[in-house]
Length: 218
Length: 218
DNA sequence: ACAAATTTTTAGATTTGCCTAAATTTTATT
DNA sequence: AATAAAATTTAGGCAAATCTAAAAATTTGT
Image (cartoon, rainbow over all chains, first blue to last red; front, side, top):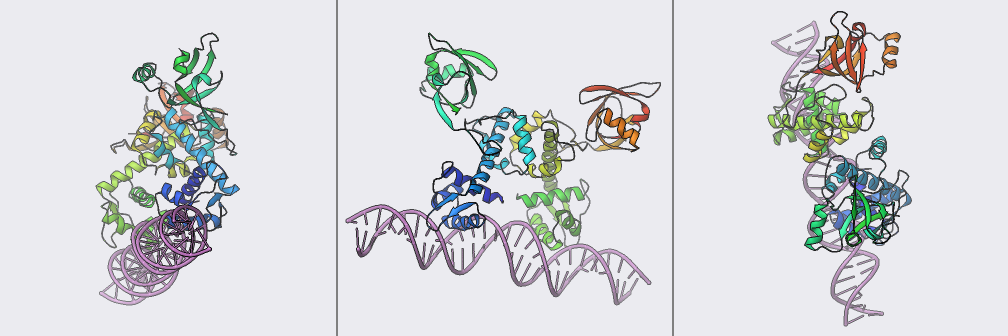
């Protein structure tokens, strides 16, 4: 597969919301930053190769094979994102462009060993799930931290209350978007949480926890 | 720069033995696995871009700018090789193909941080020196282990005596091509060596040391 | 030195992925 | 349901990087 073909497949995957949805030529053109006519050309090629199902004027969907390819690209992209953040000190919002390039590197062993090196992560720095080698993956959902079950881990993806005092609190406690938070325990009577963040244990009140969104798996 | 241009520059660099040597069209064609006519075309383009010095029928050399570009590609290639071996458990002879792809990834921060993550290595798994960010690098030389000065480190790149008993010895002591060996000390009277390999200290006789080639720096 | 062999370049074609402009199909509106 | 608007496809071209075949320059052999 060429680089360009892989980009198309990935975009069709994302626009199709992971599975069935028919994807329009124009939508693809916009994401690819190209013209609809170019998209038509490429779709024809992808169709001949069996990567997409296509009937003229009716939009495209990924074939079973195309979906497999898409998931493998997404897997590579997200594993590289984890690598960049965990090992190379990138912040969660700097990784996309580089991962976009790294996702095209072809070597099965590379990805298997990278996965192992990273400890088989399940989510990337944006909280999105990482497909397994065979293409399965858990759905991710967004939850307020105080609603995350004990023993679960998630990525901090947003705040409900963005008032200065709250943001200051986050800053002081070194909690930032993209951080991975593990819920160790919950105190019954006041709802306060014992969490682990960057290998450090801290306790936060229910009030704080109900203002932080995590993206968790399952 | 396109991927193909980068490949040409790198090949011209290697064929020119690192610097001045004029490189012939045919030699480039062979390395690129393409035809001399294609090379002519590309050389013309590289020349227009100021990457090479070129007079028809007279071969090419890298310009100052072209050399800079070449060194940056070599740097990336070798850093990725170190990464693959040190962090992802690749063996020294498996890394080339993958590094060949990774060397084209464009991100200054990526390479800087990779360099840091790897502890600013000076040599790659084949014993070749890694250019610094600014393009300087030490020459590497091949020496028998017993001639390596105390305090130096090198990569095991070959054996002088390849008899089965010797190879068996290497195997038993977990010494393999590509291993990094640090010379800790040398015993005056029998010439035996105290070396560090994969963080383990071992002692080897002069007889052994005089059969192992290391590639060292400076 | 000069013809033969080799190397290198030019000319013209091909493929991939893109473009513009025009034609066609679908969808939206009245 | 007919027409206007929007989306999509086709047609014809372009640039990059390659190819084959043929021409030109250089090197080699005697």
